[in-house]
Length: 226
Length: 238
Image (cartoon, each protein chain N blue to C red):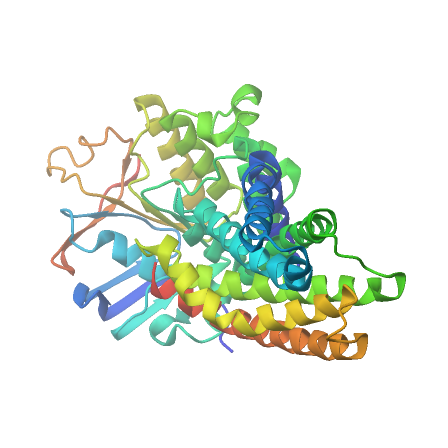
């Protein structure tokens, strides 16, 4: 895993330098939250939909994070050298997933804070662990799905439009699970904390499946298109 | 699992076919390169030079025939042993493979970290390519074409690869840098590494390297239509 952390550190250093998350992705995600609120224009409806809106904004934003993660590899054809130097493609997959995970967790914190401020969502002290676990497991799932499909389209001409088409349907179970678990953490009357934890378990299974599948398939996917 | 061997043969291709997009980019190429050799692959655009390098790096699959790189059979390249071979291979393509937002030094450092090389190795590689402190601290996006090429070469040098696969490495370099690159290739082969580089410029027998103004006279393999058209032993390293 040493090489995976080297790759992750490199991706995060590039992100820190370019400020892409700060100046493009985060404002975009917050704008999505604001526009949803404007479109729904009903406080009870917004409050009820808050969790789903947070994770829909996360899903859209994760695509930008993943597109950026592979753009830095393809702009100057660095991916070939990276695959060779890393030896095992799985190391590159793990590294890029870790970097995307860190960025998505930061974004999830921002969006939950946005939901609290903009939508009036509340989190009781007893539900904080549920909320944090949801953010971690769902972010890992999104990062692994995004990295897997990002690799598949990295060298295609129409990658920007293909990535959402491929990744969003696959991420639908994650969207449902994360929304329901977050809804429970927000203290919704329609779902209790116990049910929320059941959804977290689904998110964990989803993350494990896609981390495993990504590690196994990353090399085949990225090299088939290179 | 196969290990990377030292049986004196770095590359061995027998009737190797590589198909890209339905087109046989390599159409039955056969050649053998010993460890420590310096080989120039020449040929027109589309003759299969770059594909041969990428296949040797395990980046494109062999459809038919056999290909052994550093003793590893890449005919079954999905096998786990290709990753063992890759760690000993350095590939420099048409592009430089640099990260625009990292400085020249950080780019070389990243290559070094992946193979466990030290900061001292990074300093030596930068010095070897004539990259001074000012250039080293400049982001790759702001470097000139020649400086970017030097940085990419420094990233290759720091890896201490056993097999160097270079796709038109002289491109974008001024004459002084070309001479310096030739010296680096010479040192690499003297240290036991195998160097295979491509050029689409066709030299004449009287001036085998005039097109590139290089100081090395390598073994020259001419590719045409995805097969080896000629294989001429050069005068070694001058």
